Image (cartoon, rainbow, N blue to C red; front, side, top):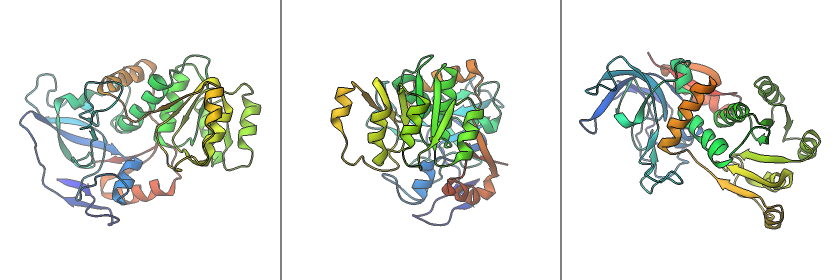
Length: 331
């Protein structure tokens, strides 16, 4: 079968013919129609991820059609979406020590076919296309846990989502709006802020500008009930400043690194709750699909590339210019 293959650190991204492997007799064969990129895939290609084992077929997100199955629940021809969790475990609060994500070390979704256990397969929400479904799993699950489960965002809450434009941040925006929150955003790109406003954000600020937090406080004078962040770094002390007393900061990444000279006193004096979050449990994946169906949420797609042009898709992701998910369309 044809698949994207990472052969070693920083090697050119190539599409090659590779053998299709099956791990156990109860796995179901899915003919993949679409997959999508995550920054996780880019970091794996650059050797910037834990326990990398090359060669690897990347990809955590995928949609397709059942091509081989002995299960009456998943008949041949059924359109499905894949849950990328592997061995989350029984505790919804935290993943198990065996936890991993589809796409490394296991074969990922950037291929023509994949064998997958039946408990990783779900029906696609009826209003979504194959491409839209492929844009959903990893970003959607990460955002849903951060917004709904950890942030506990409710109608009327004031919410700030930083770094708008990426897949998780945009899904967080859509989930928070569906929950009735008043959402503000930040970005380094004014075009992305305007696009976010068209999706329902009230307003946004350029975090690249000096005193950006003062602009935010003019827009939302009482501060924010919940802040969703993935950057960390030097701006984190600013987030604790603009959070409302008794508010929450939920973070699912640290792309800007650790927080220098973190002001702990502000956290306890303002009674802030700080929540770390990543991915989500299998139960939350099903809950997310139901929520998306009920609210008719459609993931934002930035662009679609063919599987053969996967290298161009990764170049586009590395540029940081995307607004939404980058999808690969398979033949």
